[in-house]
Image 1 (spheres, rainbow over the protein chains, first blue to last red):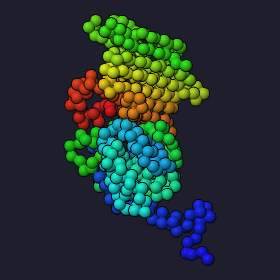
Image 2 (cartoon, each protein chain N blue to C red):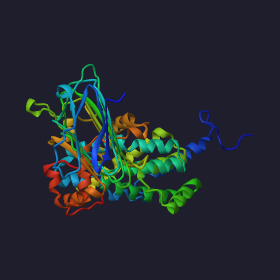
Image 3 (tube, each protein chain N blue to C red):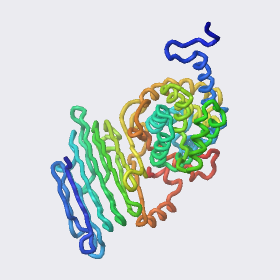
Image 4 (tube, rainbow over the protein chains, first blue to last red):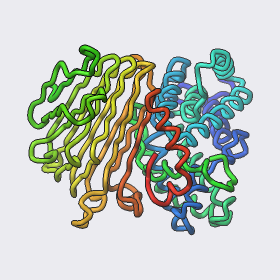
Amino acid sequence: MEGEVVINDGTNKPASMDSLLQWSQWQLIDSILPTGGFAHSFGLEAAIQARLVSGPEGLRTYVIQVLENTGSLLLPFVYSASISPDMQTWHKLDKMLDATLTNEVGRKASIAQGSALMRVAAAVFQEVPNLKTLRDTSLSTGAVCFHHAPIFGLICGLLGSDVQTSQRAYMFMIMRDVISAATRLNLVGPLGAAVLQHQVAVVAEDLSKKWMDRAVEEACQTMPLLDTVQGCHGYLFSRLFCS
Amino acid sequence: METGKVVVERIRGRSTVTQCFAKYPLKLIIPRKVGTSQTDAVWIYTLTYGGGIVSGDTISCGITIGDGCTTVLTTQASTKVYKSVGSKCSEQVLEARIGSDALLVLIPDPVTCFSTAKYSQKQVFRVMSDSSLLIVDWITSGRHESGEKWDFGFYKSTNHIFLEGDKPLFLDTTLLEQGSTATVAERMQDYQVIAMVILLGWVVAILSSSLSCSYSLNVLRYSVMY
């Protein structure tokens, strides 16, 4: 007689495992996960000071542009890491991304967020011992910068998330963080931010579909103005955020 | 089949062109008297017949700079990319090998894409640990006297630098394509030029340190340079 576990015909995995995965996925994209994402504005603070963004309409445009650039530049790294979540692929992707993030502010932010995410994931998802092993080995060899996008893909891949959800989740996280930064920069109130986030979700979905499942050789940046402005973050006299 | 090829080697203590080949639509001119007689540098001008790149043209050029040599690669005028006919994309590819203690200076005029033009360029530089590079890659918004501002269909520029074979040092691709969430003009706002300058190696170290001192927040307001 079968026990409590019900077999899911589609995947041959017990249905309870799929449900547990959802809890892990939600925890991974919850802003309460201590990965330090709240310290970065994705160039928004510099853009406001440079008068490239003002008001709610400007913010909406900015968020969409950040999402497009995230899709074109970083989603291929999330994709490649999630379909092949092993040490060799991760190290190769990390080296490539380090050479690709030519904007030093963005590069440092990626390393800070990636290191924090890897540390948290290794401690939280203990049912995946690979995470801790990968992290410890890479720390000791010093061969890896710990960039954010490949690590996010790696974690999703090791947890068993499907590739499309992982990429969508990455776009969601970026959108969440830019809008959250906007509230703290007083560009929009918390309720307005929530409304904006829901409205932009439609565009975010289109952009996710457009840029997902691409090889890293195709990674490109599509918003040069944004990239330049973010690179100027270090010149700001007074600033709230790290990037 | 390559459209062009140049090899520069050190002959009797001076940078010398030992191989030079070009075929339509590429033309290479190597004038002897650009620099002073004390300067050891080969100057190469790349030209296109008819002054621009026609829809569907493919130009691929390979250049090898031998150890200890200095070479300047530039253009006679801005690279104009004419309108795309039948959705064809024009392409330029440059593969450069820079030897030990050698310097390549790539300082072309900017690319100007006409309305509906489709253009893609790829530049791959393979360097040694003591090579030097000075690369300028830039694009204007178009023929703005005629009202064409960021009116082209597709522009993609790739610059890759690999150290000692295959170690990625610098990987950058900029893609500007009309449509999707915003037109190119909308995302460029009031800016009419994008320029990228890459400085690598000991020869350009002095230049790069003086550059980073003079730039401040004014960079945001008056130019786009990164």
